[in-house]
Every structure is written in structure tokens, then in C-alpha cells.
Length: 497
Image (cartoon, rainbow, N blue to C red; front, side, top):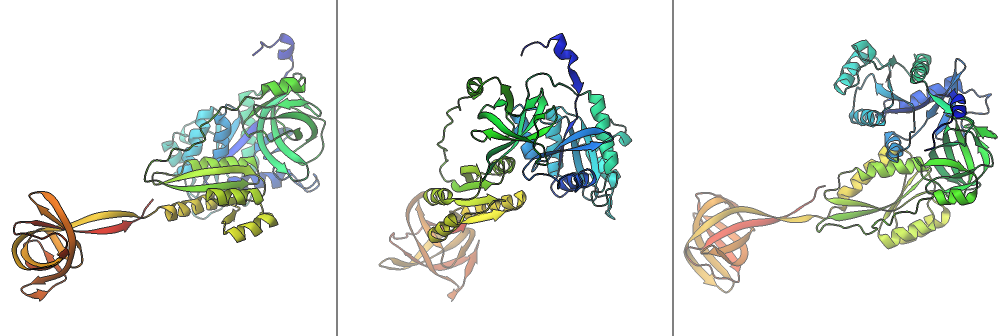
């Protein structure tokens, strides 16, 4: 990286903080974001927020804050794993009536790895069973020590339902941002991170870019490691046309020749040729999935509304336990379910799962004729639960041998073709009518048969136990002799994931 000149250093200016809100599902992450929008983005400001933006700006006491609105911490992690600095501050939402959960701990891990400061929002304070002190104690056990417990992590006790302490939460964000001394240079060529992409049926490839440094203008040529193009249209988070975007500003762009991936870094280039050179040649990954013997496979085709949703789905599915069933995503794509998806599902014996997208009429008709399952969802965790259930159903039953007991043959009463009546003593376990028999002579298996009848003291019984002397009706090819050991067993069909 080129060393900054003194002139560039002079052009450094304070920029707004970029905030990501993370936490356990149902703890109020989305509700807090909605409460902030309701408080700060009014109807007269052109009707709220453009769908699929993935980020928005608010103003508090004359200062701007950018919020990244992702489907969950999986997306945040996916972005960070690509080396992108996505946010400056993380707000961790924990429900006052529920406490620290598995996803809370996962979010804490991701935040700490990213190295950004954390603010805790203990939400749902309107609930009668709210217990913020219990939440603080649980957070301390997860190595997040809030200020009231002697730590350094700021904490607000909020209610998205009533709006309680939402302004105080915004004040904390501005205070932490001031301490972080966030700076950027608006005089250089723009650069930043792709935070959302989707395919608009009318406008084509559409991407939300977060400018992290420099000035990004309409008509600029932009490249990422997977896509490039001349930006024909720039819009702010409310869909209003703009001519330029400054650091920390989310901007909707049209002009990419294909969809870039979320989490990729973008740069402004002087011309198309240099932008094209910036594209990385995709590494030839092995497409053949090696499946161990005895493992079953569930093939999936995923269709989602936006790249963020698709990333989240892939991330969660990848982490599902796959000891017995392998999940294989034949295709993951943004856009509605179409005829090609159904054809691929037919060829790959897959099910189609759609997330917040429709199925076109041609695909619906073909799916009905070919009996291909297309299942739609609006909530990520409902889709994941459905996949878990399908994994359980996919497991083929395994036939397992269960040994029941042993008998030492003491006397041969009667021998016929393929049938014998013999007597003996049960030396191990138990014997049941109808089970299979293995005949052992001098510790070698010499044949197999079936127990067709069982008697004790010349009376029919269903079961004999260790120590009993019984007579059995044996059916089989091999002839039993005195001294042979008979092993009794069954075969069971067992199924579990």
C-alpha cells in the first residue's frame, strides 16, 4: 500500500460509525433496528427504506450513524472471514427475560475476533420477568464485563416495544465512536465493502456498497475480486438518486456486469481494463464430493432473495451435524425458482428450498408433473429446522444384529429333513420363540437356522432364561449334534441421525 502523503493526511476527516447489531434469534435484534428506524426515519422522508438495502443511516444530535442490517451473525462472520472490515462497533442484543444463549456466545466470539468495541443492549425490559442483573452475570461468565459490574463494556437496558432507552443506546454508540476517533479521506478514490447483492428483475444486478474510505461517484468504474462495471446509478438507502457517496455511507449501485459476492472489497479504478485485471481467477476447487461408504446424502437447491440471506443459509447448513447424512448444495443462487432449478432437482434427485422468493408458473407446473418438492420459507431458522427433519428421514435404516443368548445342546430327541427337536441348557442371556439360530461347533460357525418352537417341562413357552433346561424345534440345513453351542439372535432395523 502506498504511503499517505502529508496532503492526504490533511484531508482526513471524522466519519460516522458503522454499527452491526447481533444476538440470539428472538432476542429483539430486528425489533431494536425497527425501533431506531421508527424513531429516526419518518414518513415524510420518502417512505422509509428501500427493500434489500442491507444498511441504513440515521441522524442523532446532528451526527450520522450507519447500521448494517444483516440476517444474522453468520453473514457478519462470512464477511469478516473474507478479510473485510465491515463494522466499527457491535451492539450485542440479549433478552432480559431469557439471558445468554448459544447464539449470543457465538456472536461474542465473532465480535471479539473482529477486534471491534462492543455495546450491550439488554432488551425486552418491558417484560414482567425481566432480570437484567442475571443477564449481566451470565455475560461476565462469557467474558463480557459491563460497566456496572466493574468492566469497560457500555450497557443500555432497552425495550424495543416501548422505545425505552433507544436514544440512550444511540448516545452510547456516538460516545464509543468518538473514543475510536474514526477517520477517512474523502479526497482519494473510493473503496469499501460489498454488503448486499440481489438480482432486480427490472434493473439487473444490484449491489449495496459500504464506502469505507475515499469518494465514490456516479459513473465510477468499480471492481471487486469477482465482478466489475461502470456505476450508472447511485442511490441512498431510501432509493433517492445521488451523485456521490462519502465514507461510512451505504449506497445502492447499478452497473455491475454480474453480481459481486458479499464481503468482497471494492475499489474505484481509472478504467475498465484495470478493474478487469483486479478480478481473481477462481481457484479450481474440487467439485467432486467424496462420500464415505455407509453415509446418506441429501441434495439441496437453494434460492434466496438476496446474497446476504444465501450466505447465512449456507453458513448455518454447513455447520449442521453430518455424521450420518451429508448435505450437498447442488446450487445456491439469488432469484426466484425457475424451470432450470426444477430440471436440476430432477437430475440430481434434490429438493428445492426457497427463501423469500416465489416460484415462476413454468417451474411450478414442471415440479408438479415431475413430483419435485419445492418448499418456501420466510424465516431462516424454520428452513434449517425443516432440513434437519429431512436429514432424519433421509437416513436409510441400518440392519443391526442383536445377540440374545446361548444354549449348550445336551440331547437330540428327533431328527427330520431340515428339522430337529433338541434339548439343552441356556448358558447365557435368554431364548425367544421365532429368533434366528447360529450353530457353533468347536468355536466355528457351521450353519444357521430358526427357532420354530420352545418348550420347558413339555409345555410351550415364549421365552427361556439363563439356567433353564429347554427343548427347541430347530429348522435349518445343518444337523445339530450334542455339545454344539446354539447362539440365538435377531436382526433389527435402526434409524437415527
